[in-house]
Figure (cartoon, rainbow, N blue to C red):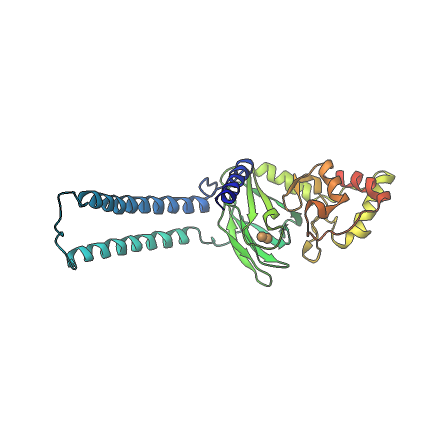
Length: 330
Ligand code: CUA
């Protein structure tokens, strides 16, 4: 039994060593800053209480231990009103302090009133990938979310299947993504960079592989990204590209995927492909997006991500043309 736990613990250490693990204690937004501050205050308070209580206990155990020449029972005390008032009052005061600080934090991170300068974002949870739509900009993308630095992003969240939870530890708290219900939250990034997100509600076999990235861009980089995403998908220039294009635009792929940059995907099962290769990962942020992984994926998606909705075999005569065209979708 012990050995089994040893092996599990060892594996967990190994896993934690090879996965970058984002933490809300490394905040990059006002929300996470407030939450991290509250966490440290509570931790320090708890540590002080722990050290005082355990210290007093150990001190009394040592001071009043039974000595070899000591046969008499010590004085037996039944109740001490003053002590009891003190050790009731101190925890009550601590709990009141915690309550006040928690309410202050909740108010500080409450959704700000929306303003015209805000960016509106629609997040849709799918098993097992994330759809990100920018209704005001006419952009639909997946698994990688761009926001401009220092901007308030008003987020509305919905799900097409089961309950998911949207969580970017360094930028925000968790918000549940529930079918049949619109939840709202907000996001803002203080520093340019990439922040990992993860579905935080068990949603099936690939729950752990329902990841995403938030890329906080400078204003210029964000504008350039938007301009590129708004462009129509690459138009085929060669015969091979045309075959690949037809397969996606009107063939079997079109049942689940779209090449229209602004086509909201909720009715579709799979991510928008208009600018597929402008992203760095795919399949719920699970794999790096490169030709090798794309080929493996198209050969056997179920081997790479068992249970996902893409359960088709690409006809071998169109395989190369499909890869050729997909690679052009920058
Ligand atoms: Cu979606 Cu867990």
